[in-house]
Every structure is written in C-alpha cells, then in structure tokens.
Image (spheres, rainbow, N blue to C red):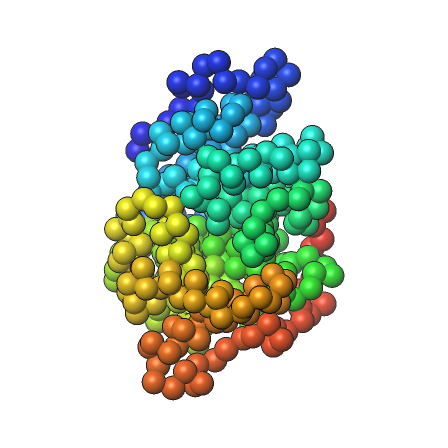
Length: 361
C-alpha cells in the first residue's frame, strides 16, 4: 500500500538545525518491521502484509513526531496515512513524543500536547506508544513524565510489553522471561502487551498462538490471550474461519479473549472514523456482540467502578468488569465463567523473573 513519505508536504515545519540533526539520528527505517528480518512466522495469505503495514504506519507516525514541529504539521502528516492504519501512526507518534520528552527532561510536554491536539481521538494508542519509549530507554512507566489520562496511563505497560516482545523476542517470547521485582498487577498489563505482540510474532496463526501461549506459565496465559484478542480485533489479519479457530484455541481463556476484543472496539470507536471491516467481522466472533455493543461494555465497566482511584488494581478490575458483562450476555450462568480479579492475580514465580529492564535493548 502507498504510505505517506515523511517530509513530503512538511517543508518549513522542521525543528530547526539542532532538531533536524536529532531527527536524523532518531528516524527509523521502515524495513525493520519486515517479518523476515524480525524472524517472525511467515505464512501465505494477507496476514503478513496487513501486520507489516501496521508496523510501517507506526514508524511513519514516529518519524513524523521526531521530525516536524507543531500539532498541525503532525496531524497533516499522519492524516496522509489510510484511516484503518492511522491509529498505529498515532501510537508511533506517542512513542516519538514520549522519547523526546524523556531525552530532553521536559516532563511530558510533547506527549501532553499530542493528547490534547493532534491525537485527541487516539488516546488509547498514544498511551500505548508512550510505553514503547520507556521500553526503548529501559525505564519503567512513567519515569520522568507527567502526562496522560489516569486510567489509560496503565496502557503504557501494554506498550512496554509489546516493545520487549518485538525487539527481544528470543528471551521474552522464546524464553518466557519477565522483569524481576515487578508487581503482579503491572506484570499483568505488561503481558497483555506481550500478547498483542504474539499476534504479530505468529502472523495471526490460531494454532501457532495456542502452542505459543501454552509454553508460558499458566498464571500468565489469561493476560496473553487478552492481548491476542485486542490485536486480532484492532489490527486484523485473520479470516473469519481463523477467528473462529482462535476462539476454540483460547479454550478456558475465552472471556479474556473477548475482553481484549472489547477494548479494541472501544479504541476504534473513539477514533470517530468508519470501523474497518476486520473489526466489524471480529467483534461478533470474538465477543458475541457488535463492535459498538462490545465497546460499550468498557464504558459501563468503568462507570461501575464509581469514584475508585485509577490504581493498577482498579485498572484490572475494569478489565474484569468487561469480562463479567461479556459473560452476562453469552452465558446464562455468569458465575460459571472463570474470573481473575485484581486480588486473585498470582505472584510471578522467581523462575520466571530473570530478565531485568536493563537487559532489553
């Protein structure tokens, strides 16, 4: 597909001589998302092209964020990217702005500006993108940045986990490693991001995903399936038959697959662009409801928490609330659906905590 070429139409909006030099150092080569380069699964069909295009859109957004100055210039550049992929571009822009904030000790001014102006319709993706910046600099969210929505800030851990799976896959995916001394709530959110990465790593192959997740400790599998459901619905890449196979592969983690899909629907709906066909198709298969209904579950579950503080535990309670709403629609006995509340998340065993944040490049 034809993507916007960074710099085209953006004359006069560079960051100045010093900023231009920094941009040249930070800009990313789009070729690094090639699945062959990454040693991800290669398979026939449209999945690889779709998922690689998502990665290229991410890098387009990142390159724009580190190259141009001003909300209008950034918005103009990203709007050249097709609507279905625009969220990935804003995710990349979130990483770019957060990376610049961290490198210049600005406290989050660029990220706050992105959320308030050009990216106000993509807050979920921008918060996730910020997590990539922390992963790249080997920092834990939200070191050094004061920005973001109190609830969506936890999505930075999702981006942190995706970054690790994408760039340190031998240890984080193949070796099933996680950070030492990471509390179980944050580890759960980090593993959701890793689950999203597995969708790319296994090129949307349901049976390969089933085997991959089964290699992880049992206490981590539910969060991985949550991430897989989110990626399958937001990024696409699977046929309807493959989506049905994905439901079967998730087995006892069916509720977590549906919960991830519901959050993907919410992010797509917030963008106020037409829902892509793959999202409209995935929602009823993975959640048993339309994309708009599934997105509504996230609003209802958050409202049910009332005035509770937006802590990590409450964020996981939000996810659990979505699973209960899914169960109420799809199961006559919701109490019979396995749940994992914030108080029930198992601690990570020491055998699974041998990779520190410093070991991830």
